[in-house]
Amino acid sequence: MADPIVTEEATSNPPAFQSWGRYPKHNATIVPLNWQSDFPRVAEGLHNGALPVGMGRSYGDVCLLEGGNLLLTTGMNRLIDFNPETGVLTAESGITLAQILDFAVPRGFFLPVTPGTKYVTLGGAIANDIHGKNHEVAGSFGCHVPCFELVRSDGTRRLCSATENPDWFAATIGGMGLTGLITWAQLRLKPIVSRLIDYEGIQFHGIDEFLELKQKYQHVEYTVSWVDCVSTGKNFARGVFMAGDHSKTPGPLTQTPEPKLALPFDLPGFLLNSTTVSMFNTVFFHKQMKPHVKTLQDYEPFFYPLDKVLHWNRGYGKNGLLQFQYAIPWEHAKEGTIAILHEIAKSGLASFLAVLKAFGDIPSLGMMSFPQAGIMFALDFPIKAGISFPLMERLGDMTRDFGGRLYPAKDAAMTASQFQTFYPQWQNFARYRDPMLTSSFWERVTQNA
Image (cartoon, rainbow, N blue to C red; front, side, top):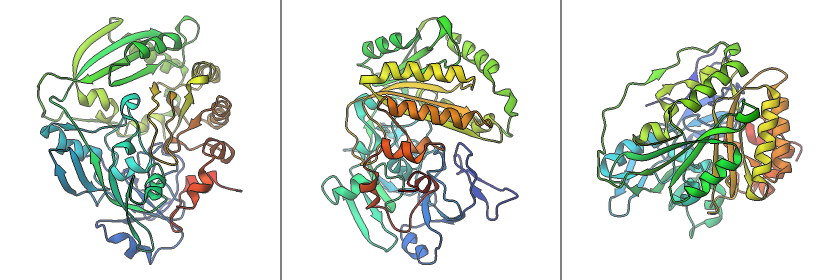
């Protein structure tokens, strides 16, 4: 089990809690929560604001609070109930998706929606309304949460569902942890008969071929593509389209865990440049040897390839990384994606983790949820002085001009103006914010409002 990112730094006492992007670096007081009753009690003695946090897998400052109190929920990780007839699991909010999988898969169940890492808490998955490779058929995570309990700093407790306190239910799903503390939640799991995935990988050249493949494989539950965002000319926007379904042939539900690798130190920043990334992209594009492959694959490498390398974020150097993740509606999805890819290639700022997929039209239940029908594109950039942040602002402006929006859970650079355009409902949402809870992200994007 991976631990939350808590590191000892010379400038911080107590230890600093880092986001996965490792930027920005803010000091805060870490307050462990081990029981559902802890929050109102500890809230009485807190000053400078507070924020519930889990595993720290958000990339930017949505899980940070400079000079405040971070309420670490990972001690609240108990399984409360499971109904094998309905697949509904009830657990405390600090339980991780990894822990849920360890319990559920051997019993023939799987997560209804999962992001690219399993080291995310149940509460964090709700608070950021995470999405996965199956958004077109399953929607976002909140669509599979029947109910949860929300506790406010004044001790008020609310059972929230689509029918009971529905406004608080909507505000909390995708609400970035600002409406209160989720103490426990229900999650509707999906049945499986094997841990194996029927996998297909297909090489493509350009956005048109990606869109053709997306249409051809619309019957497959999970689809995602890796894209080469460095190459130009005939190799512009080449990629690998990856499709998979849970195997319908009864098979193994358990497996001996494989040893994990670890990146024990920060790599020098100069190693990540357009030349090295171009070499990596060429190798990755051709690694399957054939343009089209079919195989059976365990769910771990299909859903969580990067989880095998602990602390892989250190590969971006000590300055950290920025993730840029947008959703642009279908009306402008193709032209917007092509224009943004050209802007990235022109910048010379390299990214080897570039993910392209489609969002479906299943509406999210959260007031502030990120997904919208169209193309979703995500990629990581190393932080380089004078280059990274101007590029992020340009890309954010382009996303706005194409009618899209950025994902708060992955952001460290969105401007206040951009956020307030992407999420015009933010002022209505602010009415549900717990007066004690805030975050560095919230303070940044609502400034001067």
